[in-house]
Image (spheres, rainbow over the protein chains, first blue to last red):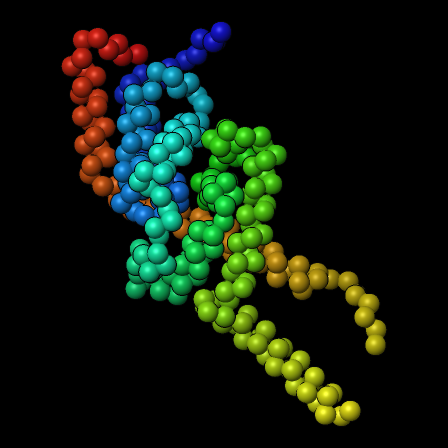
Length: 200
Length: 63
């Protein structure tokens, strides 16, 4: 039995869906990695959402609703086309690093590489909550799981990403001040150890 | 040697928080880099097409 619910008229629906296209593209990109495949996925999701408009409840979060559609398409067809595993590091670099933000680009590249190494469920939870601005409850709806599950995925994902970034620090970081002082401490420790050893 | 911690924030915690904040900011940047791109024309073309089809389809009831 379903309660009657309020619908948006087509014009309003279309307006709101149009406003969500950038988010569909961003979420798709985070799932696929590849920008072209991601746009195919986002277009599919947009059209599916349009055709399903009569099942959308006015006043609820259309972003979460449309993300659910997009995610379902991705997982039902991921074996076919928009698999992220084809994403080579050089591709990530090419899409991310522009001259305008080359310094940032390196950090973001490192982050993207770290995200790529997360399990799918952790990556999407972190993206939805940490970047897409969904509440835990909404992210749980999108992923079809309990709120507690989303929370623990997000926290595990954060931890894993921080660890991955740290293990890559020497090659990727552009955060010179911090590195320099750490490197200095390291040197001092080594120096102390050496002098202690030679004293014996 | 006295290993006891005195008051004040633990530098390791401060550093962890700093990294966490930075991670959040970078995650949003990664996402917003895409949302700030201009949307390829295909999207609106497809949506307009679907909308026109509905308008010209006598079987479909709008709202």
